Length: 220
Image (cartoon, rainbow, N blue to C red; front, side, top):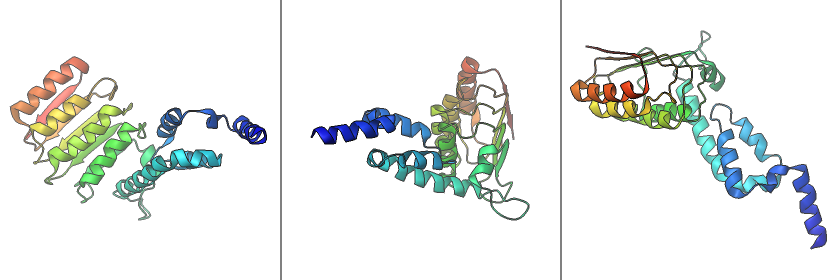
């Protein structure tokens, strides 16, 4: 037992992370689980065998999130015809999605966009515009907003949606997410061809006047 304790102490000295509690390690791993750069967490798990078990569940989740991020990135193609990589998505300063490329966003795309915002992976993104005529307007914007509420798009200055299926429910979800912490640089919020109506505009106006000073535009 003395020899075993000495061995454990030696390993812990070589890898101080092994001294963390399970909860502390989970918080650390969560912070490192970047869907656009999964190698960070994978490298951490390889530091010592004692880290692999407590990280297993989060690594499985990270793998799924990375695959979803690749699908979102693939909505864009380079001039060579090859799809974007996660590195391209991470460095993007502008994202024009939906009918810009003839590829409507699925619920998974919307959820992934929200997850990337939640994990603060899109730190360079300055413009985000989604134009489409699909039937998941409220649901999609709601999924994106749920992620944004937990995270931040620090460089975002312009945000726009044009979707005939976007109504007051989606507008209310977005209003709750657009705080000065989540979008500190936001200057312009624009809606086009939507159904947000008076109720949606009231939700947005009441929320935004308390948190942000920006230009709100509604076009038909």
